[in-house]
Image (cartoon, rainbow, N blue to C red; front, side, top):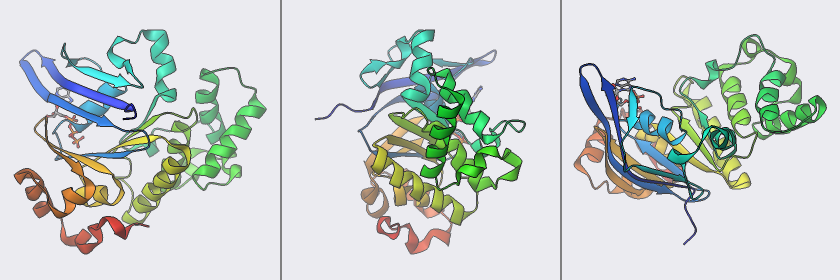
Length: 272
Ligand SMILES: Nc1ncnc2c1ncn2[C@@H]1O[C@H](COP(=O)(O)OP(=O)(O)OP(=O)(O)O)[C@@H](O)[C@H]1O
């Protein structure tokens, strides 16, 4: 079997505060294969973002990853990376699109400058080379190179989100983590962006960890889905099974709670 891009074993994460410990992630294990689109779903507060931050090593106190937890990316234990290794790891191995990422662009810098920041941090590159690479990356997300001279406020929300995704792809990461990447966007733009990601991962070969509470949207794009409840991974199945024959009572409850808006459109084949 090919080695997974990401392998999470017995992940336990606590939030440690003055009033005690809150066990936010409980013994979670899963793998993501090369090129796989993997979804993590569950209600607000079930621990999805906590897992995403831990995988990127972006977690901060009071979050504490318990001893015995293992996060392997490309065969290396993320927990054991030192600062220099961590700098290489971020963007190259794992890149993360945060919730409300479209507001994470720096408002006083042009789009070109924001690309340049990531590109130059990871090797010698001239301004002309960086501009050329940034234009190539923008093309991947269907944005004209002239936008390099724009400021974020001159771009729509959907465009800003695609720019953030292009920046995340700048150093060819093996894994793209998207934590509720499209929640603030309207449904049509959400679909467009996810379709774009899907085309890109097939073309470039990266894997995706997609996090959302919107199970309807998730089954349309994911190969496999993990369902979380109060810090535990209660079901892990392919998207078709999650949709047609959910096994766990909580997965069934999640479907029952979905607004009818998705209706029959939640079928996996509905998305080209
Ligand atoms: N800094 C923190 N200190 C204490 N508890 C926290 C902290 N951050 C998150 N938590 C708690 O950990 C649990 C998991 O939070 P997390 O953000 O991972 O959930 P989530 O499933 O991503 O939710 P959402 O979809 O709302 O982002 C929640 O109960 C939350 O209140």
